[in-house]
Image 1 (cartoon, rainbow over the protein chains, first blue to last red):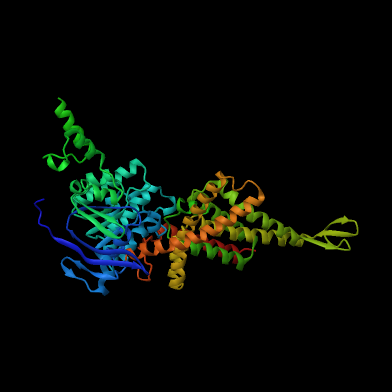
Image 2: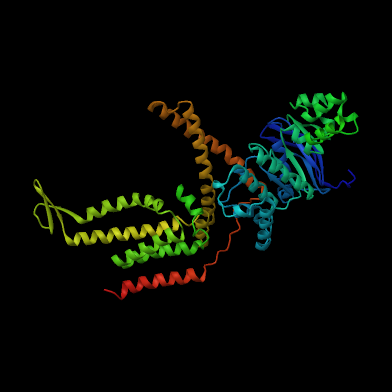
Amino acid sequence: MSRIREELLKTRDLSFAYEDKTVLQNINVTIYRGERIAVMGPNGAGKSTFFLNLNGVLTPGQGEIFLEGRKLEKKAFHELYKKVGFVFQDADSQIIASNVRAEISFGPMNLGLSKAEVQRRVEAAFDYMDLQELKDRAPQYLSGGEKKRVSIADILAMESELLIFDEPMAALDPVNAKLVEQIIDRLHTDGKTLLIATHDVDFAYRFADRLLVFSEGALLADGPPEEIFQKQEVLEKAHLKKPAVMQVWEALTGKESLQTDFVPRTVDQLTAYLSQTVK
Amino acid sequence: MKIDYYAYHSGMTKWNAGFKVLLAVGTLLMVIVFNRVRISLFAILVMSGLTLIAGRLPIRTYAHYLTIPFAFMLLSSVMIAVDFAGTPKGDFNFSLWFFYVCVTRQGIATAAQVLLKAFAGMSALYMMAFSTPMGEFICVLQNLHLPGLLVELMHLIYRYIFILLETAERMQTAAKVRLGYGSLRQGFRTFAGIAGNLFILSMQKAERYYDALAARGYDGKLEFLREQRPVSAGQLAGAAAYIAAIIILGRFTR
């Protein structure tokens, strides 16, 4: 990457406990502008709690948060929602209004914007998520995929720079899962910074340029996916397996992925390479 | 619950909600104040016409939803028309063993009047219910300065009713496939289990929902963008003509 690395959000020794149960321990992460980060680790490893801390819903017991290099006062933590948007896993737990338009306006209204600006952002979110035809619908008459699109539009309308997705493809059918993946790619192209929790190693491998692995409340690994997926002890501890494309590639070349100059990340890249070589 | 579906898919959904509420409540008041058969009939005609033609509600559906209140109305009207007495004092008398069931012309007229009045009120309320989504209705209440806390509660309750129903339905299906309703006894046990679980689940989810609200900057005030739906000149003229017609029918005819 030749891009200049601009710091967006940083945590230093961030810890969080629910009553006396420690959920996060000394998390040090620096997120740079424009990054595509996949967050992995078993359920209960602390991913969701970490996200809620980044977004300001939960306040860490200890530790510091830096926004664009500036250290935030503890009192200012709850203002983080202005910069950090969070798309929940279950769209139904996010949607609260009785029609799509009102729903998408909820975030921008809370930002204290003018009516006209809220209107503009809601319209822009409709267009971006292709929701124009659903704008007067009630959430109870939307399909699962439509609800997911609404829950993403909710956050887009807040125009946050960092977008967090908690397992965005969970419980979606293949058509909608593909659609959401396309939306995520488009958001990256449009300059958003993305932090996505997922259990799908194949998705993480083709999407992310950086991987964070959580285990038992601690950050187990942080680095490029091709490096982390080589670390046997990390994979075992976090109960992850190697992505299929990586396994095939290593079986074919007889080498670890890092030692070859070209590394396919997707099935398409792999098949293209194979058909070329076979010919 | 089906009424909610029709409200979102009515041809009148896009009309100004305040206008519809005013029209319905106004009709209700006028029908009661004037208390005349021809006004009730006129109101029934206009309100049902709106629901069926402007709202494009299928007539069978409308009839179906009217049957239940109509049955009650009919029963109570019969009670108004009929009298019991020891002597045949009515215009029509039916001798029953030692007493008479008497019906007077006056009684029939009163019963018809009451029946039509109730029916007119019902048709006005149905016009509103079948064309106004709950969210918009709540906003009308908000404009009438109902306390903010109540308005927010209504918004949230309305939204979560559907989630609760959906969850209960899923639990019920899951219980059914395990023969949870095999016998009456089992049915009771299953019902109790589902009710208890729903409560616990609701408590757990409430926390999740609060996080989701806070994640979008909720600070104790629930505010949404409302679409302005101006009342068109045609609608205004129609309403004016309707009210004028009722007043003329009520005041200047005998």
